[in-house]
Image (cartoon, rainbow over all chains, first blue to last red; front, side):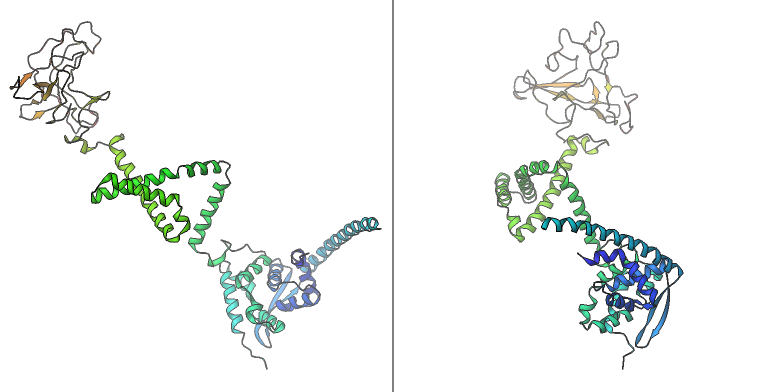
Length: 115
Length: 352
């Protein structure tokens, strides 16, 4: 299954989750997402998502000079972002449970047939 | 030690991305691309891949940024690289696709394909006519030659097989279409009804001159009043104020049933001007066998009234009357007096 399609639906949640642990600049968020296992995540998608969440009022943003070159734009979560993270976590958990139940139900009869 | 300057390729890439976002507001664009350089430099040093491969296409990159940021795709969807010509092509392709989807299209197409030989002949005739008009020459041979060439070019589908032929045929067809349209308009004008008065039709030299009724020329007009009394010296004009003239001034009329030439004689007004639209028109009869024959001196005969048979000027015993009066009794008047009084001015429009 194409994980990029799946990612599109949950990228907001993933980015919120990453930023909620610690403020981060664009590529830093990408790196942490990939480290967490979302290897297929595109950096432009993450930057766009950060910008959209910022516009929606879920993130704060500030520019900091970097040690080694151009300045960096950091994003941090704010109360609104935390509320959003909470809502989306509930939604995702329910969805994931539903999917898991569905798949389990689909797998069980198949096993019986093969026996 | 790190160089505090961004990678030049990254700088160029970011510039290209910003150009792709040029339709956004400055704020939106800045928010999307602020810090992008630093991020990309980081990504480059992380991956170790060559910059071209790591950075990819700025257009795609910008599109991904947009869609993730919830911004609409760039107008025209193809970005800045799409020119006017490409848009026109796209539009034409759209319209074409709409036509091709129609249920009637296969039939129409088959019909047009069947008509192709007609077009081959038509374009050949137009080409031959154009050439012979401009350069003279044997029209028939030229037309034959042109038809053979044109049909062969079409039949062998030379345009479909050879690029050189294709451009020649496209150009030739275009010229032929223009010529056909031009010929249709040009030749259709004298035949069609023109709403505005056409001055050229006053010319006596025109073959269409004169009055025609039911396909045959009118040689004379015999006016009667509502009581059936014959009128003399009546000037007639059409709706444009043009004098109604039978036959053509100076043109020899057709011989009548008795093999006589009946020539109209114009009335002459006080100013000495010949008036050809005064009716009934006096006529001069000559024998068709030659002026030096039986009747060398032409006799001027006053019109005596319409005859049932188109025998010209002989007064019939009982002449039919166009008016519903019981007996019109058109007595042979000696000579029609030319009325010069109220004559509608030829320029007066709407004179009836």
